[in-house]
Length: 447
Image (cartoon, rainbow, N blue to C red):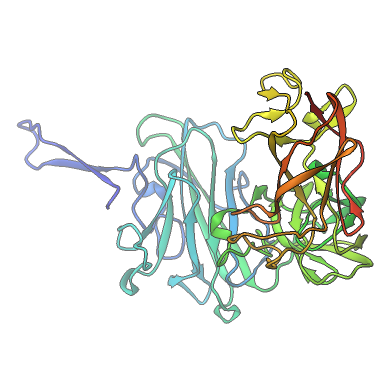
């Protein structure tokens, strides 16, 4: 589909002897208006001024002055000190060795606010732009009232492609229609390499823990989730998405952020400047191990944590700490939470009775039968075996299911039957191979 809209003025006067027609770019611009060699700029269609190498136009990304071949990266193009009413942009990426027709990598819109066209002004097909119009351009789909656009760029697969240059033309409209424009131009040269540039990441002392909603333990095991706290850990903030998985296996590189545990690549679940969450890989030692984070700015100093075969923890977030008492998250089959009605405002709670069935979640319980590799989506039924004990108050609960939760990564599910107990708050824990879940958890019951 060609997104430009043809507007024809069919009313004539005696003065005009030819039709008056124009292109309206309310949904993006023609190709080759990015300011790159061989391209025009937005001033081909808008009236205003041109600002070369604009000091107010920022191109933000994780990779510093280098790109990692074939590794997708998120870019944010932002205009500071903006005074315009509406904003638009076009960007292209060219090989330094062939800046007019040498396409460098591919663009990916992150929302319907942007789209990609080839040099022939046609939307890029699934197979990519044709050789006759190989250069592609990422455009705004419609003008924005905020001066920020975000998109992904996947660089060339091989370092032999050499340096790439990203060109951006950013249109700031201060008037009405196509008048009163300031077109800000900027380019960014990226050399093929393993990353580099930016601030070196720093992990806080003691800033590596098993995920806090599951006990925040200091022991870690294969397949469990870690939270890493620090400074300059990432330039972007996001969690993994479906496109980051490869055949059901989670990514080990997310926007150039990588983590190793005992020298093995961890699976990156979430990144932000101050916190990164990962899934621990298989094969770590049952001993002190080092956690190291790498990004474009360099490598962090190592933080030492204790590796273990199992490091079980149950879901018990801070929201379930009421009156100084920490309650476990347990749910009935209809989704209602197990606990005293009104325990947490706005949530549906009811007290479980002996014989009721509840679902509880955990992490760090270790290997199952069959074994599921760390970082993989669970697609088959698994079992932790008869060595698991679920203790509620003075009674042991029957478990009808004890394994990895289907269609999740690293999450364990326990379907239990509430045993005969006195009414009230009961302490609850699970134990496997002599390793217990966190202490001080409670489950409220009634008769």
